[in-house]
Amino acid sequence: MSAPSRVSVAVLSWNGRHHLETCLAALEEQADPGVPWEVLVLDNGSTDGTVPWLEKHYGRHPRVRWIESPVNLGFCAGNNRLAAEARGDAIALLNNDTRPEPGWLAALVDALAAAPDDVAAVSGKIVDWEGEHLDFGRGVMTFDGHAFQLDFRRPLSKARVPRGGEELLFACGGNMLVRRESFLAAGGFDESYFAYLEDVDLGWRLWSGGERVVFAPDAVVRHRSSATSDLLGNYNRGFLFERNAYLTVYKNYEAGLWERLMPAVMLTLLTRTQTLLLENNPGTGTLRLDPYSGWIANTAPAAAPPAVPVTLPPPRPLTPAGLAARWKEYGTRDLAARGWRKLKQRVLPPPSPAAPEPPRLTDERTIAQFRVLTNLIGHLDRAARSRESIQRRRRRSDREIFDRFPLYLVPTYPGDDPLFANPAFTTWLPDDLPIVRAKLEEVMEAG
Image (cartoon, rainbow, N blue to C red; front, side, top):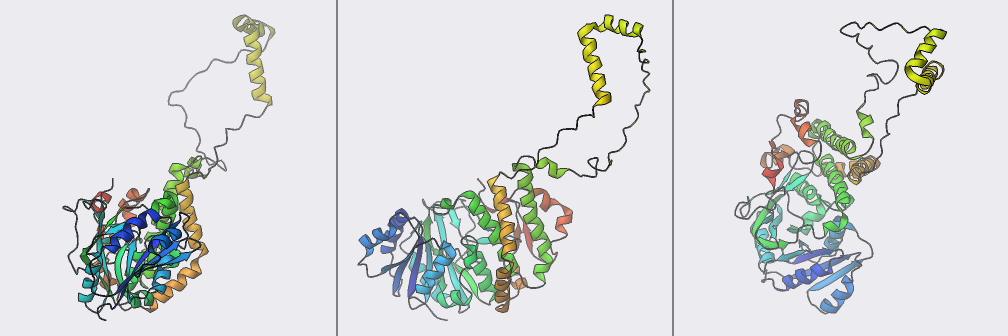
């Protein structure tokens, strides 16, 4: 491979016209990257007037062109569409809610040109809008396919930022330059993901296919974090995180390692689902019951005898004299009420205890978890075909990859803490696989 001869800057936008105003203006201020370049925008089914705005402000621009989709294709399919339409042999993926520094594109091009031939992509640095805190420098992946932006939101003075040319497991999809040939040969982004963790999946595929990813610290963009993704809503994003994490490990772990890790991955997903179900939905206390602990088939233990025998006075005989004595003691009203209660006890069956409230699924986050399970089961064949294709391209073992980039185990979701601390769970993690145990606050600014 050689330095790119032409670069296409790919910008995906969904109802982000106000973001494009800043992003495209910043691209106008870019220093000369030393190669011809273009800006290619995909309007992803927006309803905010993005296309008329582009026509008005960039209709005659020699470098800017755009594609219009009538529906939201998602981040993955949208960027694949941009890659298919790109004229460059390298594609710079850029989030629309960013402001690239003037030297951003030149730094990416220089880094890729200086890299060895087996480098398929370079990842730039992302900071917050004020340029004071880190957004993305290096990503780490957990054993079950989730990922973190290491030191996300930490001040730049304290954040662990990689050096120039340092290897990364994956480049961030919002600031990366990738060789178009490598991107397409690896299959591009998995369109079944829609959004999230697609860059983790792509990075793993590039590495297993024999290529590498490195860091370019001078390629800086400022980012309004989650400005676009907030439009999806928290629960819908949660569905994508859990579903896509599972797909990432299922498709990419090599044969032999996947079978060893699958029980821990599945138990983690099910524990999170069960914890959310029990803690956030009414009536789920009944799910904790063991029906053979006194609930069915006379399985309740016999009542223990009293510690000290109690001698009760014999009942008064039902004679005219006895009734007269009771009438004198209780009065007419109380005597009649007591007699009626005793008659009911002897004649009528005892009332059944109140039936416990049945479980009801009302919590949106719990519903999202069950949607994940339903989706995965409903698309097993598609995922299996993707796995087969990825493993067929493999040129590098997972052992070599994870010796470079250890997997993480970070309690993050409800149920994680007790599960990950359980010795029985630990026995399901291969003892010959590098795994870093860390707390969430050690990985990122959790607040």
